[in-house]
Image 1 (cartoon, rainbow, N blue to C red):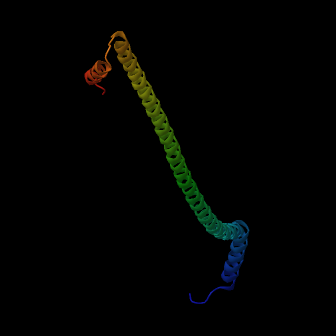
Image 2: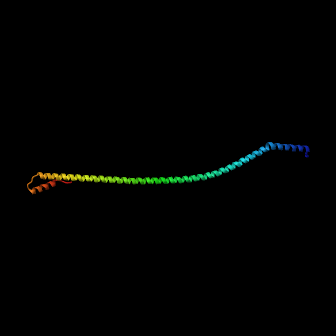
Image 3: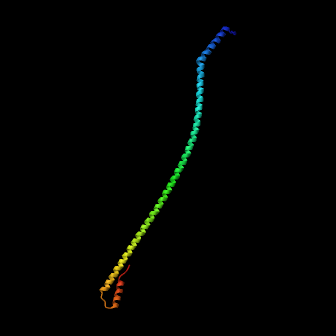
Length: 162
């Protein structure tokens, strides 16, 4: 039992070799092909991941650059807005000063006009009073000069000037 028979041994070797050839043709090549495809797929995936990682780093730097540019633009817009606001405020102040000056000048002109009208009215009233006094003096015929002066004093005391 412990001695192997040469025929059995030969048949075992032949069957083994035949099985090895069949397995190599039918199973070994597809398994190796599958492993090679998987290895290639993994390598491609790693290369793709590395490429994506580089692209992501590049995109991150581009995003940071865009963000910095956007911040600069925002700061510039805010600066321009402040300058525009200050300019508008100053223009409004200047316009208000001009309007106030115009209103004051108009008011002074109106006051001067009313003053002149009042003076003219007073002159007219004084002229009228003088004419009335002169008329009253002339109407009264007095023979004596002393009586005329007394009458004029009496009339001037009666007339009250405001």
